[in-house]
Length: 112
Image (cartoon, rainbow, N blue to C red; front, side, top):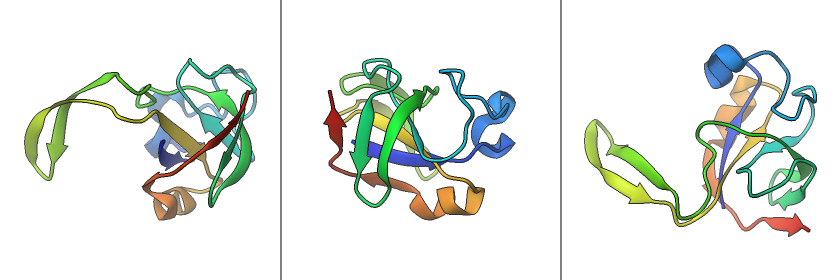
């Protein structure tokens, strides 16, 4: 999976920076934003992050096979691309920690 990071700040969440996840739970501790193909409460183990539950969704959270429009490399639009991996977002307590994680492709264990 492609795992990016976010924190509950306005830079990461924009107008949705209420501190409440899409599941209605507080945006605190370790949690994961994942596509709707993963039910709220699904447990995932992410190398370098640990075990957390899916409690959030997000605009950039996509399933493998979905199209992402107007992909850019640097300042140039490259093309529309079809995702090879699910995209998830990992919650961190601070913006600095989210930036430190960045975006990584990781093998994720999903408890079904």
